[in-house]
Length: 314
Image (tube, rainbow, N blue to C red; front, side, top):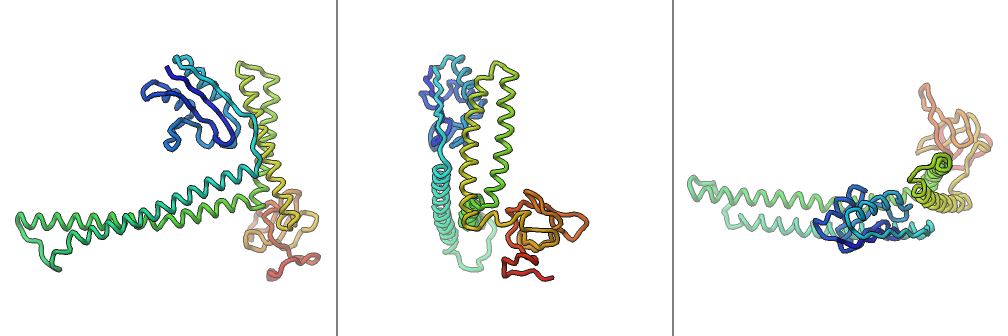
């Protein structure tokens, strides 16, 4: 029987170590609890578990079933939470590694496409141009050679097409990473995380009222989730505070935007119908209005404030 360690750390996530072997039943048990085989690490683990709260209930339930199967299992959970700066730096490093891998893959595919093209040309370069395919055995050999050349050329074209997609995928990855760091996106993320934190606090309060056999595991899991949420919210709020000081966020609110003012949202000038605490309602040209968060407002034009040279037409 195997000796297995199920561990969770912020930097590595949830991983399984031990002297397991193919066919000993450990893989089937772990897969039932959401573990997957990581080929690069040569071990089982929970996907996307880095810098997230440990799934205590799942980890200990898997450990119990493994022990029931005769294995020796230990569970170790690190309690610390890494700060947002460290988490973002680690994520950026992993993304850069993936981009480098995509770039190397693109070069490899380009070389393969060129090699296939040369192979296709070499198959038929000895044949005179326009030579017809004769009947009989020699004709069949001629036809087979042409078919192999055409199929190889098609493979070359498809490989070259796949290679041409790599730069777009790399650029898309960079745009997605930059999008997540935008102040308006960060503000929406803070709102979402705060909603999750309130829901988590209600669940933690419910544990005290309705105890169960899993209450201790759930409490430990909820405490880990809460610690992560608190750190993420604090880190994103610090980013927003810095953006406010730099004047790139939080410039507009119901204090300086009024009914019938013109605001620029998503590249279009819209007329304000109502300014609320967290949102602004604007006209659409139809019978209804659209509502956006204040972080969406990029410019303002009105009688009391004129803060942009890109003035809308009356």
